[in-house]
Amino acid sequence: MFGFIQKRDLILTLTKYEFKLRYRGAALGVLWSLLAPFLLALVLYFVFRNIFAFVENFAIYVLVGVFVFRFFSVATSVGINSILGKSHLITKTNLNREFLPFATTISYAISSFIELLILIPIVLFLGAKIGFWLLFLPFLHVIYTIFVYGLNLLLSATMVYFRDLNQIWEVLTNVLFFASPIVYPISVIPEELRQIYMLNPITAIIELYRGVMIYNSIEISFLIYAIASSFLMFLAGYTAFKKLQTRFGEIL
Image 1: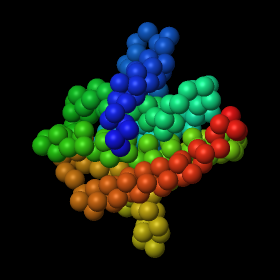
Image 2: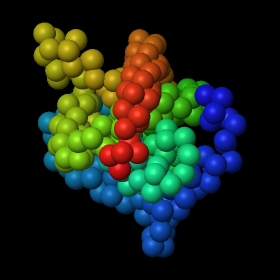
Image 3: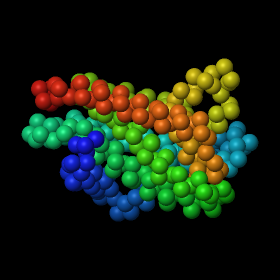
């Protein structure tokens, strides 16, 4: 952690580069990135609205779920290549290697947070009960970012050794999309399977975002699980990265 603080200027430069790279050639910048998830949410709403009509504010329910999951899916799909795609920085500089997935994660975290802020007046117009708990949104996003960073550490390091991982991860991300409560409520999961289903940390994270952005509430058990999962993911990712990076130079 001290290394991150000591070289914060370098990290800031890498993060700015990643952020600009994402929107290079896009005239509308961040607003353009809202279009794809918004259209996806719209399609999902019209497909499932009759099935899950009992869900309060179902349109907003789907919209927030799609936007929250989008950070995970996009950040990891890019983060998985953060080492392999910048091999020249690994082999020709003494850059701390964990800075690369960190810069990628932070740039997408910033982008995602901006998207969520833009989303607030939309969900408010659609009937969300926004109140005090909305102030909790930045902290919640930090917890989510820690989780994604830990995962990106693990994925990017493994990708150096196993080049087909990005294709496998794309499939797993699609599976995880439907294994998370994005278009359906947790209540539809059978009781005997619910405990297993709740092991998915993304479930707790999505429900926390919905709590602060739609229902002006927060579920403490979800919060505790999200915090624990995020720090465990970070520790696992960091440990694996440190072990695997020893051979980056000779493989890359």
